[in-house]
Length: 238
Picture 1 (tube, rainbow, N blue to C red):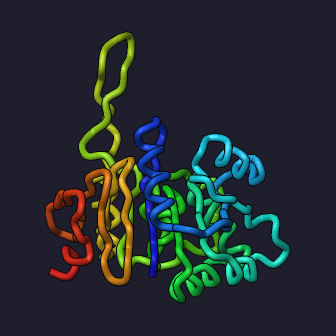
Picture 2 (cartoon, rainbow, N blue to C red):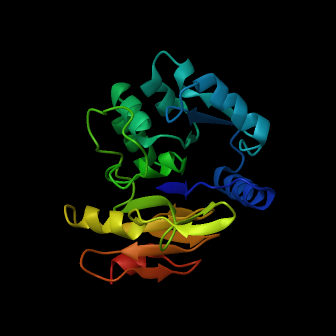
């Protein structure tokens, strides 16, 4: 399989340039990419915005919502890109259009798949390590299972601080570590916390980390910081 999974947080010229370079290297000479905008509300506006801000990397993005037979569109395309937004809305729409199986089968047969944020979440076995509000109830939390671990996108270590009246104050809500621990109280699947700007790229059986740190969480074990360039598959198989 060929996967390019971004955590999100690619605002700013340097991060955008890094993402565009990764896309060009990943998709190569493909001209058109099937874009899935279902994590957002305004599908046409989403595609237009991707072109306007340069997150198309020079490719023509064709919205999947324009096709009457969306499963056939997946079979016929040369590459697919699932954008970020709300994971609950995205999974709801993927199941509603019968796209979870269609995309999974196509990617397992060699179709290049790119996801960012919510698009990365749905490459996992389930969407249950998302950070999003459940604004819609999908028919199932099951996702594509393209990777055998969960990803927590936009991950940050430690607690949040916020600014009020010129001073920084701690936020006492749960940390991402707390949320992942709660997940592991119910599910045994490994979780990779991927910092913003980070990318995981899969080629065959290897998943390489670039541009940011990640953290590996296994049930009942202390988290492990993963440096850039590491093969995460090797860590999971120890």
